[in-house]
Amino acid sequence: MTDRQQLIEEIFENLGAMRHRLFAGVALPGAQFTLSPSQLSVMLLVKGHGGIGIKQIASSLGVSPSAATQLVDSLVSRGFIKREESTTDRRAANISLSEESHRQMGAIRQQAIAKMLSAFEALDDAELSQYSLLTRKIASR
Image (cartoon, rainbow, N blue to C red; front, side, top):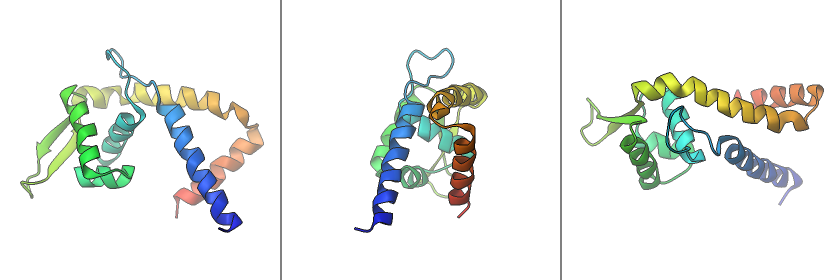
């Protein structure tokens, strides 16, 4: 294994740990429970795409379609997202945020950003600027 590949694997592991830390314990305002990192990832993905299918969710999260279905079902049962039959394919469903969740996503985003502020205190201003530049460069590819 090359040094470059080892570094990329380390970055991959660190990103997963950061995602879990930043998304753990986030709750919709007034909700009786917190969202798991995976549930929050689904909600953010759905918000970003407007309407999305199970296959897209599974692919984006790197999980099986059945795991994505379980995540979606748990959020549907709590009224956070809604599932509507596709107008073009009866076997497919369009997943979207409920109206209430759509309104509350700003609060969820603020909770995640507050956690990020704390996590990124490990970096000084120059390092944070460099990190932002590097992640933007990678994301743009």
